[in-house]
Image (cartoon, rainbow, N blue to C red):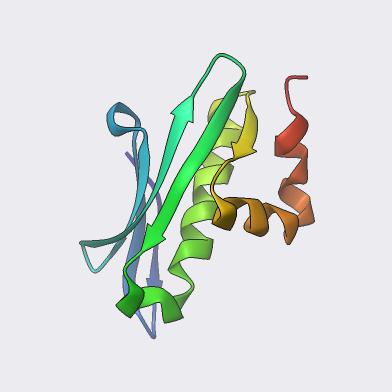
Length: 107
């Protein structure tokens, strides 16, 4: 399922896909997978466990776009809390106050 698609003039066409069977969000640049955000879902929370973007593509802010779109999807699809086990996701939420409510949902 595609949850976000846009054209980045400097980078190309960007798409974020959610694959619930693999518990993964993938960011694609011009149709090529360049990053992932893996998660585990429990009865109370979505635990983001790992985020990785191809080092050659990191200058485009793809990790930030990937995490933002994944968190937006969790917000819309579930009422579960988010647990940022991945240090990148934890830092991203710390610097984006509008997403900090996800940490305490359902409690």
